[in-house]
Image 1 (cartoon, rainbow, N blue to C red):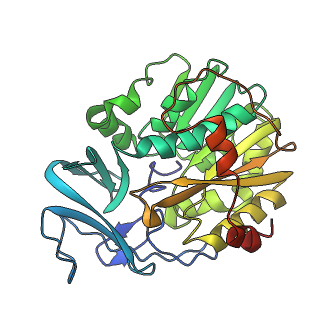
Image 2 (cartoon, one colour):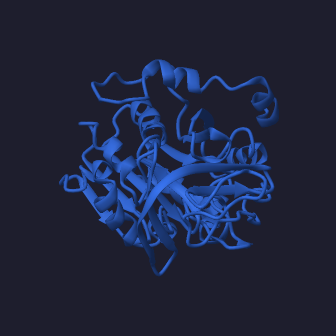
Length: 329
């Protein structure tokens, strides 16, 4: 991301102050969000009153949403403060290793494959010839791994400001980093907004924005000027992909985000949805913005996946009635 994978995925969630992360509660009027995430510094988590959870649980409550995510812990594996955020790694009882940035869940070993596959494969199958791909954020390298499964891809640039996220992923989530040494991969630890602004015009086929809430350093990733820079850097058939929060909790954000993408020059947009058990509401989405009309069929590949398939792709684009109405689709 422009900021770490999750500051763009870790946006600032500290104690009672808040500049929240993915879905941790914010004013969904796109681009100027206020956070309200209440992480627990130094866990082995803090007990949540009246919930019966003790110190052996990690909990991420979303106060404005009136809900929380909790995971049973075995032990803390790592804790450090990078120049950008606090990074914690836990071993959980049933979800494998857990990475937490500024008190908010970034990923677990058990369910991250759903998010990473749905951020990568729909666009890669929709583009007729995806040779050059950019990932803004994605410091855990899971999206990078999925992109590199496609033989058609010749080069991938991953731009994430916080190198420590990647180094800890290499140590505690090695399965996500197994393609980091691929000669097609270029890892850059710098500001993603500035990188895209300076990118060559019309050179890239797909840009994947693996970010978090439009708060603090990530706010610029959800603004029309950034979308214009992305559209300028993409070829005529280029596709921009951005995670777009919970389709249950953040409908207004999705609506305004789609409108900003269209104003920035995209000809059409599609939002797809998928389960994500350890993110707020357990339901997540990604929005694709096209330079040409969306294809009615997709490239056939032999890519190995655990969640994504052509049938899942098609089904994920079928939005529920309330969302269609809200988005004006």
